[in-house]
Each structure stands twice: as C-alpha cells, then as structure tokens.
Image (cartoon, rainbow, N blue to C red; front, top):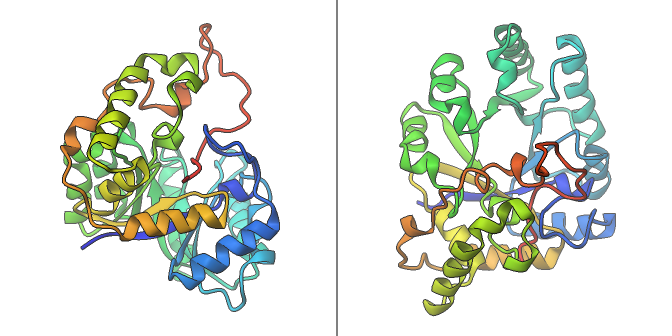
Length: 306
C-alpha cells in the first residue's frame, strides 16, 4: 500500500528551497494550491509558525469548512511551557479552527533537555482537552528516533528520508517505528531541492557530490524516469510510511506532483541512488562558509516540484 501525500506550507510564508526562484508564494496562488489539494483529497497540511505568517495566510486562503487536517509544529521552549501552549492555541485560532490534527514537537532536542518530560506532559494535556487529536515528534537520524518513540510513545514521528538520503531505511528505523505502532511520516523527500539543482548551481560545500548527482540524473534519463517521479515513487512506496509531505510553490507544481505520484513505481536499483557525503546529507551544513559560520540564506527548505 502506498503512502498518502500531504502538503508543506512553509513556502507560503517565506522564501524556502535551494532551487526555488519564485520566493514567497502569493496568496492568490496559495488559494489555487489549496483548492487543488482539496479537490484531489490531500488532507494533511504541515504548518510551521516560524515561517512568516503562515497560519493567518492559511486561514484566509483555504475553503470553509476546511477539509484539511493541519499539524502544527512547536517553537522552541526557551520562553517556557505556558508561552508555548499559548502559541499553539494562537496558531489554531489564526487558522480559523477550533482544533487541529497534530501538535508536532519540531526539535527533538527539547525532549532531551531538562524540560523534556514536562513538555510532553503539556502536549498530552492539550490532547486530552481536545485541542489536538494526536501528538508527534519531528526527528532526525542523530536524534535516535526509535529510542524517542519507545520513551514517549508518540502517535506520529516525522523524519527526513529521500531517494538520496536512505539512512533511516538502511538502518531499519522506519520499519522499527511502524512495528511499534507509531505512524511514520517523511519529509524532505527531494532532499530540500538537491534532487533538482543543476551541478553548476550547487553551493561550494555541495560541489563534491556534483558528479554523483550527474550520474543519477543520467541513469534516470536512460531508464526514461524523470527525477520527480523517481523521488516520489521511492518515498510513497516505503514500507512502514503512512504519509509523505511535499512542498510546492504553484498549483502547476502540485499537479505535477500528483500526476507523478499516480504513476507506477519504476523498476530501479534504488539503493544505488543513496548519497554518503555527510555535508550533502545535512542541509544545516550546506551554506556554511569555510570558517564554519553560517551564511545568510534567502532559501533553505522545500524544492520546486517542476
């Protein structure tokens, strides 16, 4: 059984994506994207409050009653749990809703700190009060997601995984989480745009993987498979995965994603596409200069689909 598609919304509030030339999506375009998503039965909307004024934009642009099931990411807990709870409630209110589907802890490090148990207890309280139907954790490989799931027993785990970054498939974590009864959702299925960036446009830190990316694209071309279809086929057919979050900047891109997701899975040597380069697999390192300091970014997230 293939996973279902969900929609990322960060690009609605700010520039987002290594190969996104459009910048922030205009509200008229957001309305078209959401209408198409609703017409095609997409339900999950991933909402990041730090990405501009995304919640208010969604509240203004989606149809009412909303057919979507938004999942809201938490901000960091430096301002305290009371503030975090208030911010989550405000996010739901800004979208014009009485409740949301998921409260998603956006940084697993918050759970590993001294307030981790208290943070989880606060989200469980909001779930019991009906503000959220489920609570989950956004984690990466370094967060040891299976151990997190065994400790906190989240309803959902969101993980980065892609044709280029297969680490959580190869180490068995995705299947192990599903065996625990945890819903597994994957994001960054285009490795934040790396799948589509021309070799000459790669940042300096990514130039070492340029030859491998060229070989991958050449192999896909030889087999008659476009990169979008390959990336989505890999993600949607992973054992143990229930949903896949993608980001787009236009209704045309969403149509391309939906069309590609409906095509049969091609017969490819999937393991051969996996990158091993540590910098390429960690987007936080992509734009650091040679002194190790991060450079200002215009974009750092989802990819244009087309």
